[in-house]
Image (tube, rainbow, N blue to C red; front, side, top):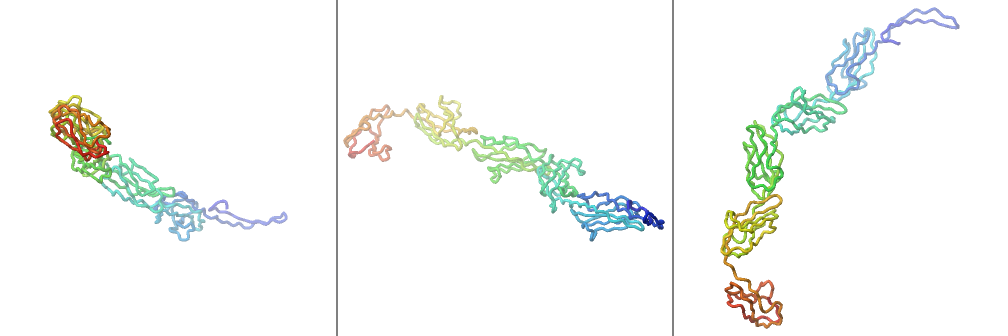
Length: 479
């Protein structure tokens, strides 16, 4: 029939060889009701809530409607099967999330029932996400923190929103396609109430928003100020400065010899100022430092870690001993090498305050740990000090040593005979030398090795400028 729910009349007559019979008696029938036309929700839609309204268009001639809903396309055991519905909508309540449901509606009149139309389907939404941490109304949440929620089986990704209002009109974080059940967020403002929520959302389906939770952000970490990161050559007593976070804030300062702060040398709590004069324990040592702040009962995360390096240790003077007397007029001054030093600076003065320097006796850039000042005055007290340097800076001056020179000593004797490298010398030898200026007496050594480790002759207090030695071995080289 061309139309549903329409009254049709029928009659018949016979026709044979150009001859027609009379029409039969007229009979009538009415065509079947039109099936209901489904309207909402649209076919193949996803993310539908478990409680939803199913709607269809009114069918001409229908007085009631039957509806079926099932998760089986064959409707063998419908989850919902209602008859006699007088409206064109039905509020269904389902129990299974993330499940395809099929539904259909047929029209019913007093004497007629339509066929079932082709079914539509929809996919129920994922279950709501259950938030984990931070807990609702939590306080002192770090500005860089990680939020977590419970995993929903089968969900491929999630969407998170963070806002400054419970209505989520001022959203500051809107991150999607999160494949894990946690997310690291950076909050823009300290001591601020934030609201957050999460829902499951992927290419297959979506879910409702979780309950919204709130938390209050912590104070932010102090920014380190001085000395600049990586400063070297600092004195052991160094003032560390950082940003003042808030009025009345209290700070904790840590200094360590390693970046992981396993070896902490200073752990100073209860600081009411944003600076601290620290006394560091070691010269030429790298230190790491960081600060955290507490205000209104809330503590920040640690600041970033900066490092500094202390100055070289001042050299330790060795020779001559402090206060030594009768020193040569060209003494050799020796000090202990400072770890990390490249060169040394030397000063020589007549006074311990180094206001009256010895002209021409100061020197910089000395590469070794010794120096020999020449032509000092006799019976004069001198004061000397040394400091170490490298590319990172210069140490403090060493302690001050003093020494006093003696009188002008004797000249070095000049050997006369036997001549150097002379051979065929008798084993009884007369050793002779030139008279030395200012000499009272002479000391003589003869050995069979150039280092004079075991002298054969070792005479002292010789009044003249010669000495007769006997008992030397034949055919033997002597010095």
